[in-house]
Length: 331
Ligand code: UFG
Image: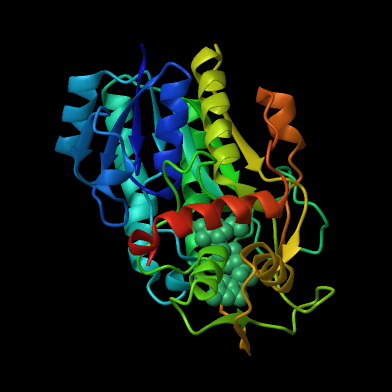
């Protein structure tokens, strides 16, 4: 059984990937500093290294102890809004941290990597669906901190022979369909969990950040991707990089190709939860692009992935089921 080192494996998306790796015959080894992740989000039978990606000695020990066949690199700061206030932290953790990891990989002879990138690398565009052939033009330091890692991966592929795929996630949401794990950020900043907390009475109201965007209803449009589909994409991308004989770097969108506005998501949440709640129209949040919707064709062509749960209804229903079962945890 191949060991897969997964940095940030105790996080929201990481915990779903661990389940998928196990279901597909891999052995995840989690490397996480628990700054945002939760130890109990990962099964006790998964080896767990409590350490930071900026700690080279801890990384070298992990490579030495577990000899991973590949790395899934997820550990990062994720809030685009926060990056507009504290960009240095994002470059330090996301960019310098990734360089530290790549160097540890290089020194330990591990050249296969799947990297968590983001749709935020595209920024504000007039194009309809976003394709990977577009030039990268992030709108905020968060997106730029990830785009820089993509650049490094391209060089590591060209010059050091790495096999790398950067998955550009659109908006991850939902929870494990079997309810084993779900979204638990503290503080929570993402739209769907915030709405569900409002629906269950944990918050007074939900604020809409901006109603004057150039979109049909004036609110931002995003491509919401079920976290279970996102996890499957990692397993398929991983198998692809491990099997590929030639060094290569590819950036690949992981989205559904369908967009949904903030107002539409709020209405769907009201319908699915059966709850009415307060909605306040507020100012724009700095750094938010008006519309981010994927052209997901490359993922299908390259490693046979497409979304099994493309409907925001299913995403919200699974998130709501998890939220109701874990109210104390998701607060
Ligand atoms: N929003 C609100 N009110 C809220 C929270 C969010 O109106 O209380 C809006 C945002 O302005 C945005 C949309 O809902 O228009 C989605 O916001 P999220 O914070 O849920 O997600 P983002 O689109 O900002 O970012 C997420 C991830 C990033 C990733 C990006 C890719 O956090 O890591 O999706 O699209 F890069």
